[in-house]
Structures are given as structure tokens and as C-alpha cells.
Image (tube, rainbow, N blue to C red; front, top):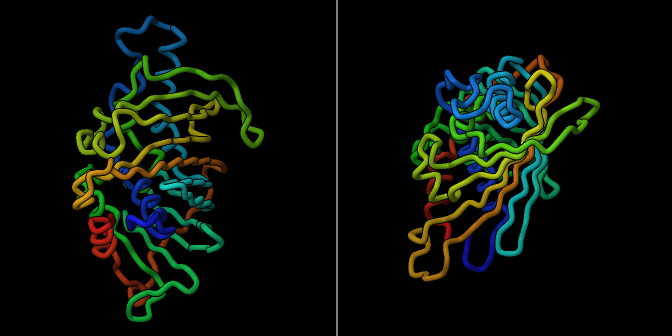
Length: 285
């Protein structure tokens, strides 16, 4: 990203890295996730909403697989890029297959064992390869966050640990693709997430989130809005405020139990671009 403006490729990378960081907020399951907060009155509406939201990630993961649609909008310096994805995800290990469309281009994408593979028509790949790969675990480690459960948004148990009664408000009933759901507004305390100190520098103190749960307590839709902040140190010689990229991610789950066939491409067709992505991220200014 240069001072003259935000390139589409840079915004696309921000979308990818932003999603990786969000899903990296997972960890060991919270043993108290299904229990009401001690300060809440038994049976109270606030307690029930909090309990439902905190347990939603585990309940969704219990479905094992699902179809997934994704819409990500990233905006900075008066420019925005929207990406739409459609595919399927294994909720147990985070493997997924997806077709992503952005700015008129279609990308074939797979996540296998925490490694992202992408293939796009006409893309320039070293040594004539057809696929690029990015090690999401390595990226997360360089960012100073917990790499656990990367690529598995349904198991972001870290969210559950960062949600209390005061963070949840019930909006009401809504129907999504014929399925009755209950919509909640949630404010996630970033400081309580694994790697919270580093994440707080990047995303601010809270992550505004909306979540729609079906009658089985599973996530049908989740929207997360965040502002990704680049530290001033990333802009040598600049006294301006840190760059900001606003990212809105909307995920929808359906057809629980669907078949997911996510395999890594043949090794001879893959070029590892992880280090290049990390290098570009450090050089953006």
C-alpha cells in the first residue's frame, strides 16, 4: 500500500489477513461456556442471551460441516473492495473449499491444515506454478497471536471467553433462507482474547459483532466489523495518523452436514508465497 492510494491487491491482502486474525482468536473450549454468569439472575433474559451466544461456537462445530457464504468489504482512503465467497467448510478442523469473486476476478481457494491455497486465471506465479500458498499459522505467529483454530470461524472459542452479560443485547427474531433465527448484538472485549494486547493495537478495544442463531443454537449468520490499524512505525518519516482499513465480514452457514472435499493441490503445482506476503506487509506504507 503506497501513500498515493490503496491498491486493490493490498486491500485484498488486508481482507485475507484480517480474516485469518479473527479466526485465530480460537483456543481451548471454555468449560463454563454453557453456564450462566454468576452475577446473572437465573432464567433472566440477559443471562439466556449471553449463554446462547457463548455456546454458539461449540454448537455450530457439533454439526461437523456446513456450506458457507462469505462477503468481505474492505475500505480505505476513499476506496473499497468487496469479495464474495461460496463453498463448504469442515467445522471440526477448519478445512474448506471456496470460490471467491473480487473486482470481476474469480479465485479458487482451499484451506487445508491451516494453509491457504489460491488459484486465479492469469495470475503471475513463480516458476510457472498454478497455485500459490500462504501458511496461515506462520502469518498468525508473526502477528503475535494464537494460531489455533485458524480458518475455522465456527470454533472461535476465544470469542466466548470475551463475552459477558453486558456485552450482549437481543435484537429480535429474523428469518434467514426460511430458517427462524434470533439476532443478537455483541461487543467482544479484544483485551480478553488470546494475544489481546497485540490485537488491541490493531483493532481497538472492542469488536462489534452481530450473530444470528437458529433454534438449535447454531450460527446461521455472523457479521464482524473492525478497523485494522497500522502502527505508526510502519510509516517511516510520517507524522500522520496510523493508516486504517475498515473491514466488514459477513458469514452465513447452511446445509449442515454437507460433504466437504478439501485437498491440497499437487506440490509440483504450488509456489509458497508466505514470506513474500509477510515482507509486503512490513513494507506497505
